[in-house]
Length: 117
Length: 113
Image 1: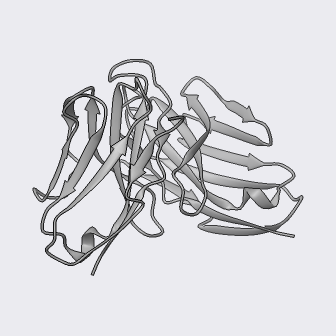
Image 2 (image 1 turned 90 degrees about the horizontal axis):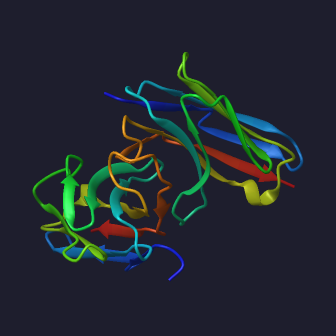
């Protein structure tokens, strides 16, 4: 595809349910980022992958959040036992460059809007 | 804590008018500063990227300026169009440039006919 895609676009979960959010980055992009965007706020960093390696997960808010990118392409963000405060838009971005290199543009997907009731 | 602050929080202007959005940051070390446009329900789209050695960069009707000494940036939009209605987010990147970005909360711009 031409850009970063995410699915589902909308997800409603009851408190306590587990959810899985998918990100398909631009083909060949080395780096993949997950961000959380609360209503009316800017995105906040969650985690970063370079290929299949998760190099930074310092932004994950709790151990209920888990991300993986097993083959270095598609990534999944999983949230266990969802809470109301998890309600937000989850954005995925990919980049052709890797850490430590000259900066590269990050291309964002449309996001998944998660609502926990 | 590294922060990026933007002003105004929201702005309404008439179609065809110019406007300037402001950004102050405390991120250190600093690698580059980016301005993104985010339409409602969409992901952010890059407008400009500037390193610390660049003072200004243009992209069509968008012109960004950067003063790395005072840690301030501005985004000037010329001859606004209805399609410019969106949130404009200032984003700062740390030392390596491709690591996690620090986002401002954005300026919500509304263009009215």
